[in-house]
Image (cartoon, rainbow, N blue to C red; front, side):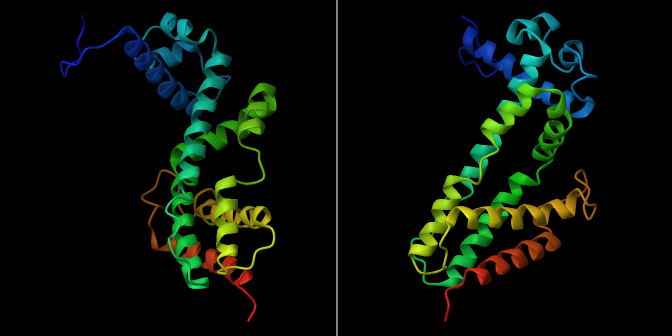
Length: 225
């Protein structure tokens, strides 16, 4: 029976999954760096400790691997984004409580949206989707929805508590996401911060932009009177 370096018993399924995970990680980095057309299975095999045949055995061909990599990254991002609306406050007394909660949600969304991996995924999909109908279909199926149900629910709860006056939580959620992601987009892809540069996350500039945009949102939906 085989064991790993820590002495734990290994199984063929664990070993196979570990190889698959290693291939997926390497493939994402290579695809993101070189693009789909310029990448071969040999390139991906060279970036992992496995052979080209092992890559082929797991995925069959380059397109299947490419779609699997994108799908996995989308899943990871969606899971992280769903987690941004956790920790809804036990008590919401008014607009100030709503603002504090939404500022935290905004920071969590930005941690996902402005991360280098997420930026690379967006660029990869934007570049390759016009030439890959299956990729475009995957993106539309998994991502291109109006807004996230969890965020809609949180805004509905804020409205129910009287902290905000929102008659259409779905539309409000879309506006909130646009304001939050727009702040980080301006600071990365428009040049205030380079994606590979020192920390965008937690920077005073980003915190100020997020706070201003959340304040704008809260003022727009503050209860009358």
